[in-house]
Image (cartoon, rainbow, N blue to C red; front, side, top):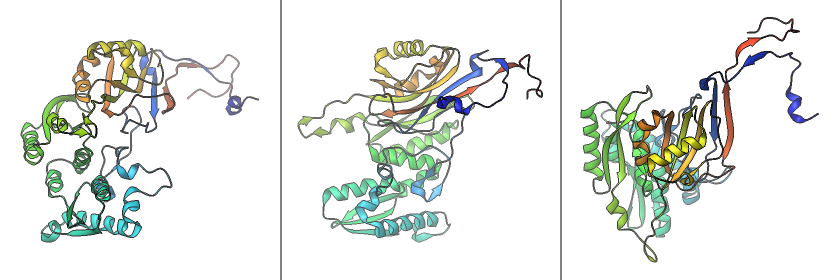
Length: 366
């Protein structure tokens, strides 16, 4: 017997109809942390669980951690980056210092919270110091590292603490990871905020602290209730990248890739891509995806588009909704999607007009 038949039961079955409307057939393509695409919570029927903010010392709901984080780059069974750089004892002491500092921040009238320091010891190799600076800030974005006579010192980041008073800790954590990664053409968006005065305060904070490196603007987004709202987007100033040079002279301009999740309803996949390409002024071949999805259905699938920035893709969201499409999870990517990078499809199917077979005498269908 073929393996696929071994799961059939002895039930007589029933009659019914499917695909009476697109909403009766929902197909969600499942991501698997594909290389070159930062992982993010995908939209759709399933609800995603909470992630941890601030390096594991305090939990709060929000976005999942990026695949590019140094602590996430090691495979299963491999030593985490910080542990490989510091050794297990010092790495554990650093984790305890970080969590104790966070606890102290939460206490009122704790005057010494801003003065606590932890020494990582002397680090003579500049490359190791650079790796440590990045690894510590990615693992614990609420910490900063400084070097004093080749000795590396870790202490709390007052800017992180100040931003936490304005937005959620998850947003603060994600913002400082974005800031430390310094990926060209990348952007960061805060959660929708309908309070204009509050947005102004956040704008002023970022411009005051990071104005030479970052720029901000507010733009219209659709919130979780499908209502228009405003959100602050942050990106790196172009001049900060123009100063960088490669070893051979001018740095070569890299292709821009943007990953997103496309939801379409009653549209062919190629038709949807054609509409997107026309609106973005690119070729259909600039889009990569891993399969053609049903037309008479609601389908959600990851895609990557070349030569389009995340902010440009966000600009066309409202126009695409009028054409039967929604665009979610817009974020920078590093390469096209390829076959085999995703896990398959999840189907939600509604069967209507259920009836017994004429020869079935079993109980009523439920």
